[in-house]
Length: 226
Image (cartoon, rainbow, N blue to C red; front, side, top):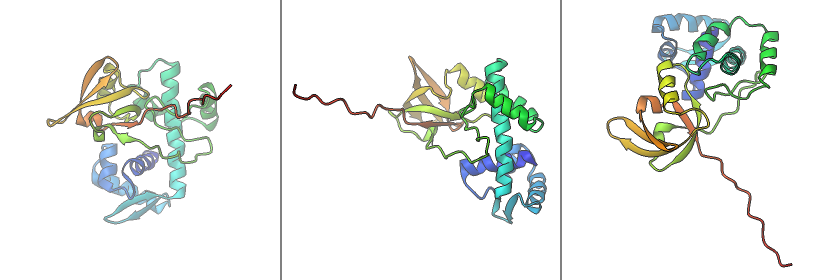
């Protein structure tokens, strides 16, 4: 049930509400009838609002459960990466297995050891201890950027190990600065990463969300007469 609530939360964030049954099924790798059955149960428990043929939305109670699971998941990913030398393409599956079983005390201690991180290794925001919904970040899918745009990687979708491995080999991770060089008509995007260029399939580029680079907006000190 927690996996379904987490999936609905993530799909609401990325695609908006209501979330269709087929989208939930695709996200979790289950059949639509299986997803329908579970979503009906969650609606009966007051964790989802469900309207037939339109989709589902989290209730306040359902969102609280989803945020708690996400907090566990993303703290675990951070701990695995920072203290157990896991690569970022390995942490998702491990965190999925552990997220339902840790105590609140264990969660508190992990957070303290990590100095209360704001994001996980993939750039996703970690919900706060009081389980408030993280502020919506102003990011754009990489494949929607124009040629010549200079951007910084903010988040990378964490569900496909092969895509994460591909990006790691290319030197692309949260915080990496990119310049869009070319949109090829064959579904490839070329970016400049440091001193080299990297071609990315649109399917991979669509998993990356970017933001404008930070700039120094402080005005230069004015010169005055002595």
